[in-house]
Image (tube, rainbow, N blue to C red; front, side):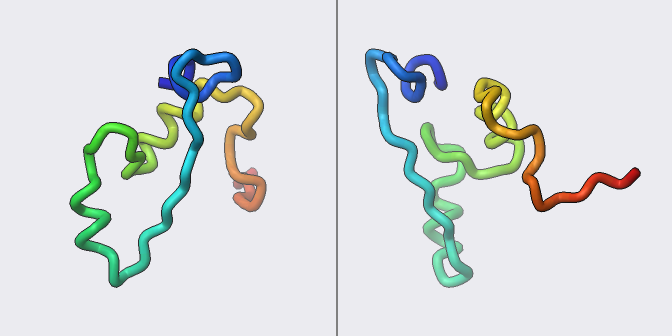
Length: 66
């Protein structure tokens, strides 16, 4: 997906749009789960993120337990 749609120079390059659902939009969120192009879970995000090495491996605000 990354190479085909998001990478610079990809023939079918598309924009990345982020939508955050509020509590009142739960039914809309549930309708989109599993649809192509929708990241609905943390695992979906991790799958895309593995192809983006410029992103940090964890959000900067999460402190590691040492």
